[in-house]
Structures are given as C-alpha cells and as structure tokens.
Length: 212
Image (cartoon, rainbow, N blue to C red; front, top):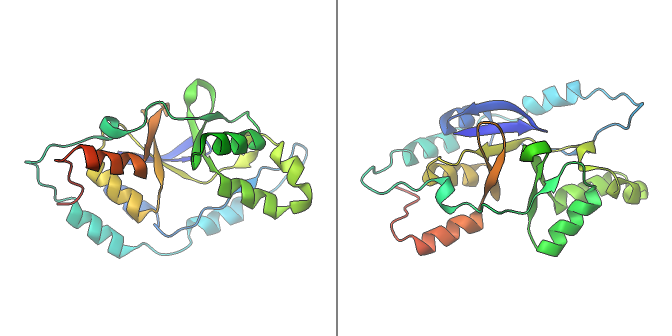
C-alpha cells in the first residue's frame, strides 16, 4: 500500500496499480518557499499546471503488471523486514541550515521531515536546499535561516510496512526514488527504505527475489 503526501496532508492511499494510474513517473517536482507572513501569493494556476503536465507512462504500467505476477511459492519479504528503523530525521520547525548540517555531518542523502508525534511531512536533501538558494542568491543566508516549515516540499510517496518488497522495488525504479519513508495509517514515521537497504537484503537473504 502506498500513499502520497503533500506537506503533511495525504491526498492518495491505495495500491501500486492505482499509483501508476494516478501519477506520471516522469513528472518533475518543484520546491519553493512559502510566502512570508503579510504577503499573499496564488499558487493555484501553477499547481493545476503541474498536475496536468505530461502523459501517463504506459510502458511502466505494462512492465509493472508483468512483474506483479509473482511466484507465490517463494517467501514474501515485507518492507518492515529490511527497512532502516532508527533513521535520522529532522523536525519541520528546524532551520534549512540545520537540515544541511545534519545531512553533511551524517553523510546521508536525504532526511525525513516530521512534525509533532513524528508525523511525516516530506523529504529534504542537498539538492532542494541548493535550488532554494539559487532562486535568490543574494538572500541565500536569510533563506538558510528560514524554517523547513516555510518550504513547500515536493509531493512525497510513502509505503506501509507490510508491502511486498518486490512491488516496492519496482515502484522505486519507475519513479526514480532513492528512498521511501515507511509510515503507518496515522502518517507516523516508522523508518525508511533505501536502495542501500534493498542491496543489503539481496546479499544477505539468498531467497529474496525481486523479479519473477
């Protein structure tokens, strides 16, 4: 089961088949700062344009459906079996500079952003931070001191802990995802599944098959 979050609000929760039908695998994500208090900015037209960009990748759907015919005689491994449970996170009230330092000091590629009670908000990485600074290079120092909560983070795909790792691996490849936050039905972060986790699982679990 997968879900799509947009800055903390869930807009979709369903199976991988429906995820492919809903979301264009080649659709880019944009990151912008929220307007400061006292300023009004209308993002409606931009959001509508983003939602309607591109066409559905039929090839990805066909490949997924072929892969989904899994040999049930093989043991099924779930996300919870191989995910990283104690992942490094950052609160959405922290600054963008805090996020950068945490990424650098821990040598991780991205950080799950959470709100109160570890509810998932989004993911932040160095590319997002760099893009924000390049948008207004003269105010880069001020931007770094803004809170993560001041960013419209990209739309986020999450997965639940009992999803079949074979289906999840295919989604990660087709949607070009390096990692997927693992959340429960209340949007509380349980861990993260990365490409590294999958590679480690393949090397240590001989009967783990990703393709049938």
